[in-house]
Image (cartoon, rainbow, N blue to C red; front, top):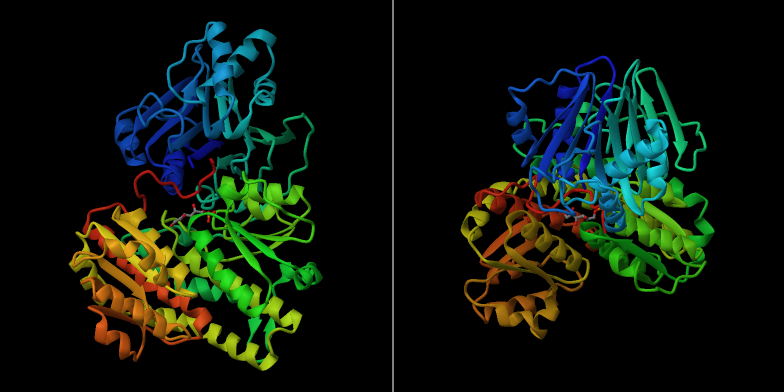
Amino acid sequence: MCGIVGYIGFREAYPIIIKGLQRLEYRGYDSAGVALLNGEMRIYKKQGKVSDLEAFVADQPTSATVGMGHTRWATHGAPSDRNSHPHTSNNGKLSIIHNGIIENYSSIKEEMIKRGHVFNSDTDTEVLIHLIEDIQEKTNQTLDESVRIALKEVVGAYAIVVISKDHPDEIIAARKGSPMVIGVGEGEYFIASDASPIIEYTKNVIFLNDSEMAIVKRDSLVIKTIDNVVQDPYIHELELQLEMIEKGGYEHFMLKEIYEQPRSIYDSMRGRINSKDGFIGLSGLNEYEEKFKNAERILIVACGTSWHAGLVAEYLIEDYARIPVEVEYASEFRYRNPIITEKDIVIAISQSGETADSLAAIELAKSKGATIFGICNVVGSSIPRASNAGAYTHAGPEIGVASTKAFTAQVTILTLLAWSIGQKKGAIKKTRLMELLSALEAIPAKVEKALQSNDEIKAIAERFKDAHNFLYLGRGYNFPVALEGALKLKEISYIHAEGYPAAEMKHGPIALIDENMPVVVVATKGTILEKIISNIQEVKARKGVIIAIVTEGDVEVRKMADYVIEIPETEECLVPLLATIPLQLLSYHIAIMRGCNVDQPRNLAKSVTVE
Ligand code: F6R
């Protein structure tokens, strides 16, 4: 939530910052601003998108080789020009951008007001720049020392960048609980919330750790802890390519990411399986093999779409590894005083690896001795770093706010995990594992085939784009698919949608069904198809309109459904990887037809780094 960019070097800072903010806009997009340092401090900020800021700045002077920018997702203070970052000290010399929440802002604010500071926004962030100014004035400390002392007083999460008119050749950055990457160039440094604004200039980056700050000059970088201990930073070489974060001819990132799934699913399993030998190699599992084999239960913590992937994993792990699984909303788990022991394994699933609730949930589990296995997409993010072991999904950058390819990549890794534990425990025979693995190897081509229904799906979207409600039903492995389909629709089209286990419908939601209610039923071939056919009949008896996702060649469901979308046949446990595809496309088309911004839906942000 909120994107930050900073630059110090020899190039014009403004174009680098604006381009960087556009790349980070998925993190928040209700207002944006820049501060440029060139003898004086120029600040431009505006409610709205980065493009609104750009238009606003078009005729203004921007020349500077030091600067910073921010794109906001509001927490404290409504989106407005005055609440946009950067925020400035009363003497006009200092300015700050911030991602996170200063939890003790009101007590600091009170103190600052007593000391004569005048506030110009309703944000929590502004207190920090007044505090830094106050410390500087009181103690005559250097800029970095004033920032460091101020941060010692702060409770909460932050990634900040501070610049000062009195220190025109310096940028101070710091983080705790919010991500920050520093790009290392020659005679220049880049600072950003993730690597996307940086990669076209340098592939060498430093991931700042929690409670670390950086004192960045054109030709030097010092990293130290907030407790003033100098660190020896590790420079990573990024594998990210520029085309991975561009739209590549698609109209929207979401559509591109939906269509990337044959490749991203393949990349998730690449080098990790061999069906001919019945081999699964998840290196993160090696050290913890005994622990997984002997686990009495596995807890899964996640949020949103990643939580849905966790539900699929519950079925997979119980089916194939025969270990009981509990899937928890990270936000509930962390405040519930859960019973966790050293025997427990906690799997944290997260695309961004930065979700505040998931991170807090694993910190809690870790403090009670549990082993943490992180399944994340963003390399170097906080959750993998806080985990004992894990596996990256390798889906590539996901920029559309609604998660698509990250979900199928998570399910792919979770499938491998379940089978691998099952194999190690002797719960799956080798011949069966070989069969399963070859079914998984066939999935990318089958996803390709599922994507070919796009035109039919578009026609269905046209028919239902004005519906006010949708119900999504599924059973077994398709229950999480129904939840995910409903979430996709509501978050990008703003149509109310509910996902339900199909048989639960008669315990309440059936009352909603009438001739205006589209009911999407995932009714694919499998052990429970007969049961779901009965549920379809219950809907039809109440005049509900059925849109069914069926297996190629189906005749039974087709007789009852008003609309059918076919997906190729596969193993029952792999159906979520295929059945999700038409539901993603359906949401996408409906949202586009309703004129919604699918890549940046209202009120949302990609990486939820506040609780
Ligand atoms: C929905 C969506 C969110 C995320 C959730 C968790 O399309 O993207 O529900 O899944 O915010 O995010 P991560 O996976 O980054 O922890």
